[in-house]
Amino acid sequence: MSGKILVTGATGTVGGAVVRELAALGAPVVAAVRNTAAPLPAGVEVAEWDYERPETFGPALSGVSTLFLLTPPLHPREEQFGRQAIAAADAAGVTHVVRLSALGVETGQPSGHGQIEQALVDSGLAYTILRPTFFMQNLSEGSADSIKAGAIALAAGDGKIAWIDARDIGVVAARVLADPAAHAGQIYPLTGDESLSYADVAAALSAELGREVRYIPISDDDQRAGMRAAGAPEGAVEGYSYLMGIVRDGYAAQPFPTVRELLGRDATRLGQFIHDYAASFR
Image (tube, rainbow, N blue to C red; front, top):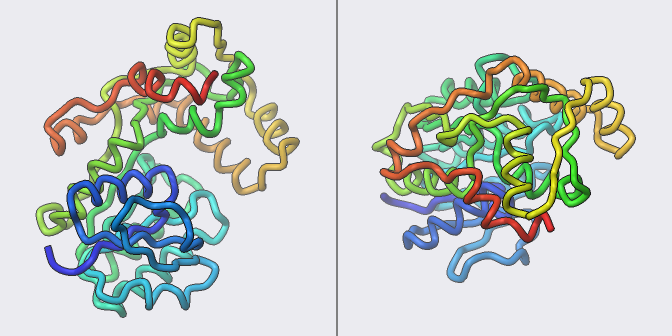
């Protein structure tokens, strides 16, 4: 490995996990952040990176050989951001881009993922694409207040999800970033080993927390209305509606063995995740 590894989204759920794992490996990691005063692991270099200010890309990419590209999910300009970042990486002499995309992109989900993937392939840069499914951290971050109140109300029906822990994504991404040539041209679906419905999730939460947590299936219209009432932007309302449709139709249910194949261990199980994050739900 030569040159530095630049990680975008370095203070977020996945990007933070990638930075921590690379730092633990002793890799030359640079955290790309809007707020350069954000707390990061000791010894991690920091560079300003603001998708609203693409002039920050060039300086951040100086001396970088490998880029971990994470764009703001469900942002109306996500595709534009991704294309600008790829062009800047190419101009700066980056040799490999590891793109965090999403499982199901092949179904045409309404985001920039598919277009950014294609732009990366067309760029001529060496690439690896990671396609994770729903994060377990969606529960501890997006649904934590609902779980504390005793119920999860979503338009997921009885659909199942092969949930993945973002910590596992971070380890996979770090391994790829540390030896990118070994993964060039690969597209990796990333899931857990279990296929679980929200009812299953509620039961697991109830068992860990010692109190009842219910799953309440609601209609798509009710979900949209609730998100709008909570002030969610329309892009997020439409995007989440589409994602729940994927769950209802069974497209998120299939587990893939990629984590086990790449890491030599099983993916983190939901019960372990809930135990580790129990404080978020109390």
